[in-house]
Amino acid sequence: MQKLEIFASAIAGICSRSLVVPEKPLRWVIVANPKAGGFTINSRWKKHNVVLQEALKRVQKNLRHRDARPSDYAMPTGPFGLVPTAGPGHAGEIVSAILDEAAGNPEAFYLVITAGGDGTSLEVLQTLFAAPPDPRSRFAVLRLPLGTGNDGADSPDLLKALDLLVNPSKPEKTGGVRLSTATGKTWPDGKPFLAFNILSVGLDAFVTHMTNKMKGKFPGDSYKLWVDIAALFYDRLYRVGPLSVKGYDEQGREVMNVTEKTLLCAMGVSGRRTYGSRKKILPDDRNICLVKQMSVFRKLAIKGLFTSGEHIHKPESVMGNAVKLVINGENPILAQMDGETALLQKEDFPVVMELTEKAIQKLAGTSGL
Image: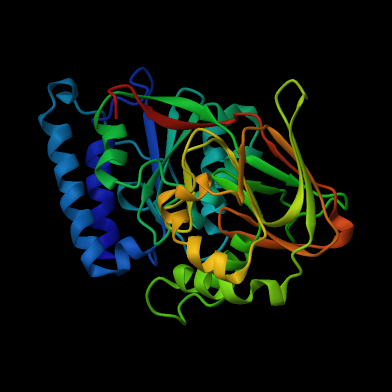
């Protein structure tokens, strides 16, 4: 808990001098996962603490921040606006409570700062997405890279993420990717399938599923381990049959039509996105990547290219831009949404992936960062 309070104290010092929405009282809450690697791995924590103190010095020295805002963090919280999560689902509950408070305080602007991995930020974003337009319009999110997987963070570099508080920044709206099935399948709690980074089906979802299932039982980079295992054995566990994938633009025009035996099909909120701890599945401005089936030897030969993004130059990759994909298939297949997985059965097809409305505000720099 000492690390969390040191962290929250520094963030509070930065927020009290932040120029985020300067015309309104700023209230913040820090949703922190105490089990996140950024806190539990000592070598990472030491580096993060150095960065925090550097960001605090920057904001204190900046003349634009000479007059600190009154410390004002959202309730119910602990010291400095800190609320540690106690388990799955708790991050969403925290945000729901702050939304209730905000409904009675229309003059304030609320900032939710996530300090954890992709799971923490996903819960926060799902809750905000489902909230009424007001008070949601008076909320923004800053996702700090404190987890093991930080693909959903606003920057993989902690200092650059904190600079969105230190330097002038403004909220801008972002959306997600929704998965719909012919059977109307949802999560067990009734929530829709949503991702705010990348949504995909196929081999990569299997890797995510096994990484989650075996988390804590394998040392080191277990995601990389399961990539290696999947390259050898995925075809024996899941039949890789043809998928019909049709893509459409904002005007409803068909922009993609592919029918191939497919290893994976991924759709990002935009291009230039990563998953699996910085694997560059979408390395350029295109938000769709489909990878065709290939031999085991070919998988082993090119799997490393997904780290650098060079896979897009290989004939097995089909890239494109679309706001909607309609996918038909005959075989069970796993889907993953920002690290959470669900099994799709034959009756769930056709499956639709589509970009949602831009409903959530995040911080965006105005100083070139």
